[in-house]
Length: 200
Image (cartoon, rainbow, N blue to C red; front, side, top):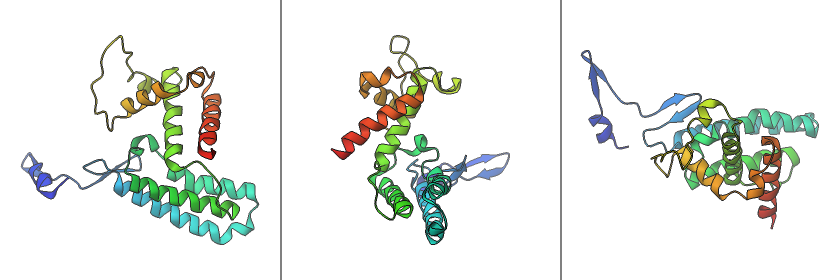
């Protein structure tokens, strides 16, 4: 959003000027005026790179299982935090996150493991949330947002809206995946399908 538009959006309340902020933070996610999440991704990448560097210096002290636990706790927990909110970020931002993931996997095994790309990991997480919502296993404040086609039409921003993205994911899923009995079995089956596609 341009500075001219930000100036135009200035408000006055009880004689006090209210100026729009360039970015705000809510539940540890940085929102900018255009919802590009560039600032959020940059902050996450910087933090994860710092943690990865610190872990790399002492990785020989830990066995592989403990090292994996530390990396998951300090790097991947931040890398994918609230990913359903910002998963529509630009290709450039996703590429930065992919670099962080590759670095973390090399620290763990001293080699570049063939893990799913970040974009595919984000899709997997969105699909898992969608499965929970469509099968009534998500919190009510999530499931109540979904309206069946026969009941009503939900008008939304189709490029960014979380709900439209979820419906799009659900409609393209293999029918066998929709028949999974639990979120855990769904995640396993979906991961296996994605790995086969990635490795082939």
